[in-house]
Amino acid sequence: GAGVSQSPSNKVTEKGKDVELRCDPISGHTALYWYRQSLGQGLEFLIYFQGNSAPDKSGLPSDRFSAERTGGSVSTLTIQRTQQEDSAVYLCASSFDRVENTEAFFGQGTRLTVV
Amino acid sequence: GENVEQHPSTLSVQEGDSAVIKCTYSDSASNYFPWYKQELGKGPQLIIDIRSNVGEKKDQRIAVTLNKTAKHFSLHITETQPEDSAVYFCAAKTYNTDKLIFGTGTRLQVFP
Image 1: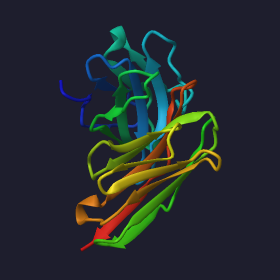
Image 2: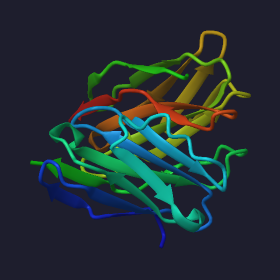
Image 3: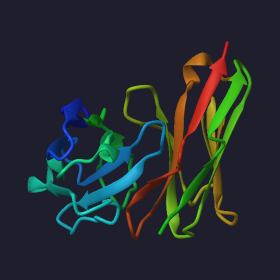
Image 4: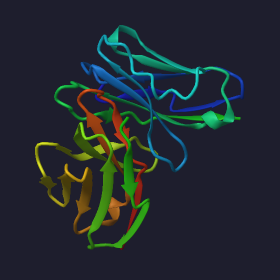
């Protein structure tokens, strides 16, 4: 596709359930980021994938959060046993090359509501 | 790790006036500083970026300045228009960590 695609665009889940959020990066982009944006807040870094290197997981807020990237392309962010404080917009971004520090393109985000 | 502070959190200007948003960063190894604009219900979009080997960059009504010694950079929007109203984020990135760290955002409102 032409841009970063995230699905679903909206997700309502019950407290305690697990959720999976998907990100399709721009074809050929080797770097992929996940961020969390709470209502009216900034962009909180969660995790970063670069090629075949081990991901930088330093931003994941708890062990309920995990992410994987299969085949260097699609990424899935999983939140287990969701809590109300997990409600936020989850944004994915991808970029082409770390050395060139090229632009990171964002998807539209997934709005997660935990009730 | 890197920490980016951004001010002000909200900014209201009259159409035609200039707007300035300022950011400071903590890691002197940071070498890439993009600015993003986020409109309601959308993901952030890059509007301008600057690398550490230059002090200023302009693109029409938008300019960014970088002071490496003081570790701060600023976004300048001249002749503001209502469509400039959005949330603006600064960010910093180092080559070594490759992690893009964002400021807390500035909500800009341009009144006609």
